[in-house]
Image (cartoon, rainbow, N blue to C red; front, side, top):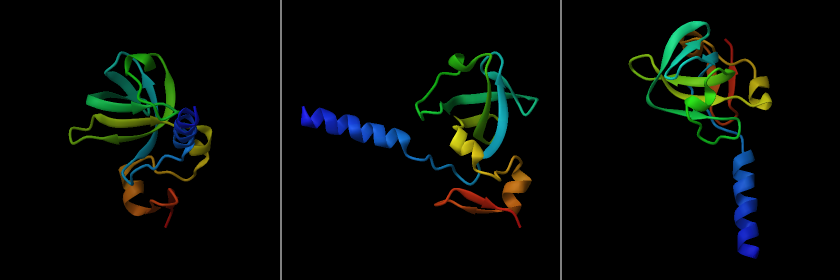
Length: 121
């Protein structure tokens, strides 16, 4: 019984831990149309084969589960420009401002990966 409670407590704490995003993650608005097709910041885009999509609870989601939805996300692209990773933001993550929306901003701003904060020049 105690072991089961420890597992539940540990998994609950892990699920509530802040997510760490990589320095190449950009913020954007995604509208999932017909997976793998989507609109990224109003422009046509696609999910990469094997793209990982995480919900606000950090659990993996299927692309089909997102169909018809509109989300503010952090995302990365693969070499071909397709969305490789996407995380639907929580209200706390969304409040973390500023966050770059273009590769040019990410290249010119400073990033503290431990604090998950961007600093404009």
